[in-house]
Length: 224
Image 1 (tube, rainbow, N blue to C red):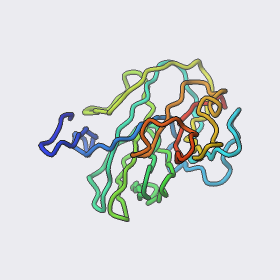
Image 2 (cartoon, one colour):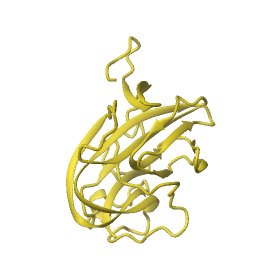
Image 3 (cartoon, one colour):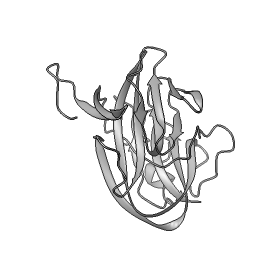
Image 4 (cartoon, rainbow, N blue to C red):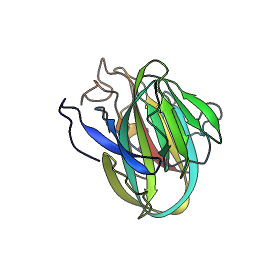
């Protein structure tokens, strides 16, 4: 459900326990990619991706067989110490853009996503999210096949694209800050589809890599 509250904060709908609920938005840009069932965070054994500089960290990834028409969809969320309810998700990622969150699933238990980290999610997975420190901004980014959305979905943004039949690695890439940071176009020069940048709130629209800029994320799709 879209709209605005009397306090001026924007809201968007997430599907929780089969219905839409209102959650506060945060001002972060987002991107999305696919995932395997269960927890698929890239801690050890992260893939080597073509053209990606060694200074860029693969925060989470998954490998999928894809073909045809898809869309990226993104939903901003602010988590607190109390769960807002069960959220059904597609293949995609949870990106914790400023503070750590705990993501729980009845089948896979609880997974902590550290500040700046990301976690892969599976198609149809049911999750709950809390912020142990009291508040955290995060982004749900999902890969949705054509006409495969859930009822009551109201993402903040969507982007359609197509890919030929093949196996792909989808990854959340954390780009370091500072004047010597690689430019986004360099990081994803060999990606198989357009990538999307994700900036922490407050980073504004400054050019990535400029002096004083902090780290940001790129979500990109590469041939596996």
